[in-house]
Image (tube, rainbow, N blue to C red):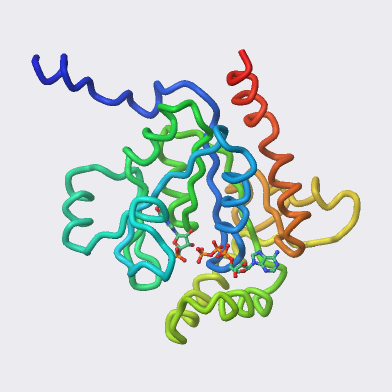
Length: 234
Ligand SMILES: Nc1ncnc2c1ncn2[C@@H]1O[C@H](COP(=O)(O)OP(=O)(O)OP(=O)(O)O)[C@@H](O)[C@H]1O
Ligand SMILES: Nc1nc2c(ncn2[C@@H]2O[C@H](COP(=O)(O)O)[C@@H](O)[C@H]2O)c(=O)[nH]1
């Protein structure tokens, strides 16, 4: 009884009101973090990042609690076993996961919660009651993706190969059949007409030109952005 009075439990994800969360997914190196960091910078007080847990080592410049919660495998496994995660996955030799707290912390502030997860994470989240907008960010080609991964200079050769292998599967399942560049491409890239798993994503954006991709992303999220901005004004 005392526990309930002084430490009220966080509301269940399903009964939390507010804007819909956004899930960004797509192969490693395709540009998800670049795009989401732009959103966080340009829309202060509108978006909040769901900080995932991972067992991988921090890269230079990454901050614990901001980019990820960096944990050893034993500690993360304990938290998984006690049911603290919405979803987890093993990717390229490391565990990654979205904790319930990571999402609740952002949503409790009335912000649009952005999650960056791999394709297995997308499938797990589909089984939850989160109801996000699902956005797939795809590279123009595997060659361009490899260039970006190498250019980022964060991975060993072995990790580059394992990420490219995962990317080939991701691209096969999600890539547009016709990544045409015309006035209709934006509509054309809706996932109802593409990929081996129709309906997995609400929209697929081929991240060739960064500015164009960012425009498309903002336009997909316009309604949710406006909800939060109107809430701030009133
Ligand atoms: N449209 C683009 N054109 C050229 N380079 C890009 C573009 N988008 C992103 N990049 C570059 O590609 C590299 C990978 O981008 P980023 O780290 O954002 O990918 P990611 O999808 O978040 O990868 P991961 O899933 O591994 O975290 C970075 O060096 C980034 O600057
Ligand atoms: N299923 C989940 N996947 C996640 C999560 N956080 C990140 N990721 C994905 O992992 C890979 C690699 O990320 P990196 O930072 O090591 O390059 C990438 O595809 C991310 O989308 C998560 O919580 N769950």
